Length: 257
Ligand SMILES: Nc1ncnc2c1ncn2[C@@H]1O[C@H](COP(=O)(O)OP(=O)(O)OP(=O)(O)O)[C@@H](O)[C@H]1O
Ligand SMILES: [Mg+2]
Image 1 (tube, rainbow, N blue to C red):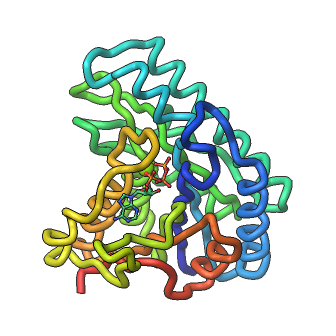
Image 2 (cartoon, rainbow, N blue to C red):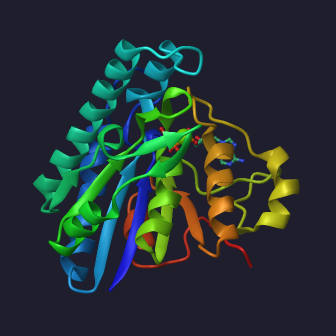
């Protein structure tokens, strides 16, 4: 039995330049790609999904700057918004035939200075054993030091990959991979090369409070240091999620060696 973890970018499933605008057609298309993979592979493979917050989280997090001051209303408003997107995604997956269940980080994880320090793998493993697909999302989460902090889907994904022992990990965004200074997709990034490449990677062209592409690559480079590789690819292009799920070499590989 192998485990696949896929993060779907908020840039793909929402209109990231607006506020709280889903891309329903894209969500439904991706749900169908996932559904046909799950139907064909339910005996051999398990799947965990994580999605980004896009326009349901980044603008709201900017508005209630929790880094400056803890604010229960801010926590409530940010969580309410990302939960709304999560419901749209989970409903779409179920409509397509995937046994998807929502998992809200606010009520299932704990942070210390932005890093996940506590969770209980048992409940997630039980979901997987029973044939369900847990669907996590970028969220606001209680933090021992900060009170509350924004936790990106890009940080949840590597954490779950190690905790649950995933064999294939990918993040689908709205670009073909990590792009170099000439505009080409970088085939592979490993920790030593990342030091130089960093200057060509920036945040996001839209509002993104968790570092955009540079934040994402940094998280996955850290993951590669413990021997776990991952891919960043374009989930906005039809068929790419399917290709990733079936193990094709899509986008940029981030690996230790
Ligand atoms: N070198 C680079 N290669 C590729 N994308 C880059 C690069 N530098 C900056 N970017 C930007 O990063 C964006 C993708 O990151 P972003 O965080 O916005 O997407 P996401 O992770 O899909 O969304 P979310 O954070 O809502 O889940 C691209 O749309 C692009 O504008
Ligand atoms: Mg992002």
